[in-house]
Length: 397
Image 1 (cartoon, rainbow, N blue to C red):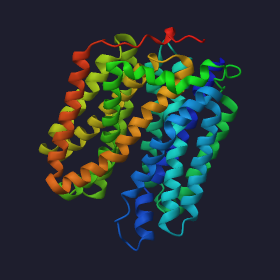
Image 2: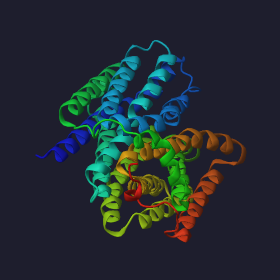
Image 3: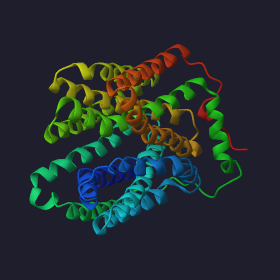
Image 4: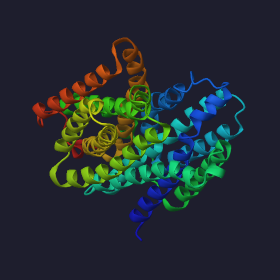
């Protein structure tokens, strides 16, 4: 196995193993917070906000520093933070350590989602869409398997504290996989040109398709927040779904994300990124527009397909932005990607919760569908217009 394949295997294996633990934790945290707050669910929504906030604060600085010092160091640091968050969950005697651990978990996952993508884009310039799709899909396989393990081993993993400890152990295992198998992307000492990463990265924003794509990424963050927070609550309150039926929403979402990310990634390598960025937005818009009005099982499938279409959008848009940046800025541009995603993930559920109480949740879904469609139309009509030169024109001076 060559060094490139060894690093990719290590990245993928570590991500899948850690996400297996995250899948177990995600289904345990809400009930743990409710238990620690005397049966009240009032604070459960803060779990999402605490997770999304580090993406806003740390994403761009982490990305820029990874361009200067290499991605491997930040991957190791990320898995360390995730393991530490598991210990906080395990020993928590009140809800405050749970929220602190959730913030640490969010900070720890930044390198897994953004910086590893930059490393893969550098290693596989000719097949970056396909390889990004495989990497991301492996993470969602782990996420989907986590809740399944709780069903298979209820006497062990339905006891939340033991699941938290298992999550921490899996993150430690992922840490050592990265340490042994993944090579750093650092190429010698830092020179003058590389001290200007953020300034150069902002030059990309003069390209109109990049600006529109970044707004689409903001909507992608909103959409994921809606799929995994708002939509399940809507199904319970409006459709009378049981907890098992609500769990099917997550299962359908993970399955469609897995399938469509690989599909979009492979096809976008062959036919270009922009058609699949637009298709992901349009298909998501269609799904959000119709799911409240169709039968129960069909609506679950529809929401899952919406999540999968956003996952396909992720692969195509991430590859698109990485192609606009030179190798020494890929960490920065990937950080910018998840900065916009984090804003959407943090604000989207809050805006929809407020707007839903005032104007109606279904109406909010229609507004979101319209925003997705308008963004896709804007990308369609801008074509390839832009002022930013290709990545190869960013030369060291």
